[in-house]
Image (cartoon, rainbow, N blue to C red; front, side, top):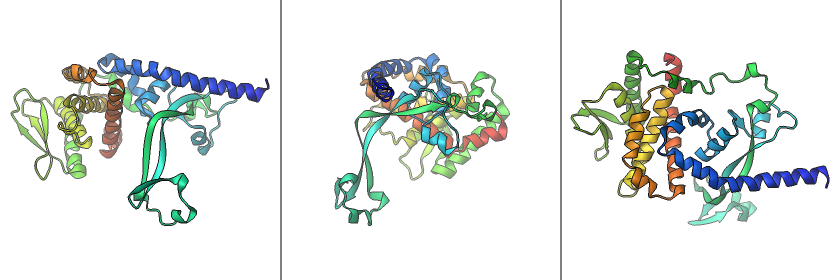
Length: 316
């Protein structure tokens, strides 16, 4: 057997093993749902903007900053000779175009049909299954360590402190209220909600986040992230089971709060456990999809509210 054949066989074996490992990965990910201690060790890997399943694979490989070969090459960074790639999973998808209310695969289009394509008519449909792709960790490149991005995981350092700086927390709260009004036209109000910390009211022209007047400052910040997550996820208890809605919103709020150093792990997971029976009654794929929904929503909030800029300004 020549070297090229051996290399191709090894590559195929690695891909097959990856698919075999998906079941194991999903089982381990499933354990995260009700175990807050596991989330703390996993959080830094979420800085890589991949799915929760892929970030879990990255964490198991003890990697940090990963990119595809072409992405590293675009930055004029090369992979060191002999380094083995990390295999990740991408959902299978096909590109279609909407022609006369019929979905036609791009591969079936005639040359003349490409001329009048409107981007709004392009639709991607995802199918069951995955296709493997490879990435390399920054330590596998020829980039000198002194040139590694220093702030890549910087936000997660805030978790090391349990002390709440009231002055900065007040500025953060004021900043958030102004930002959600500006970005989403969401207003806030305060009321004695008894045992409820907060709620989102959407049966008016302008959505309102209601806060319980008995809340502490830290609690109000978490409630704001929770209710904003409901809003962005377009949760509707008539269409989506409430357990899933609450799980996604609370996990999203927890992820953002953890990045900002507002440790609310106990309250967040106590709240999630209230819905544990309903959550555990769903299929594993549904639960993992919900983790991804929460993860993507937390990233959206972080980006759209420009929270990295706030952190840089106040050095939380």
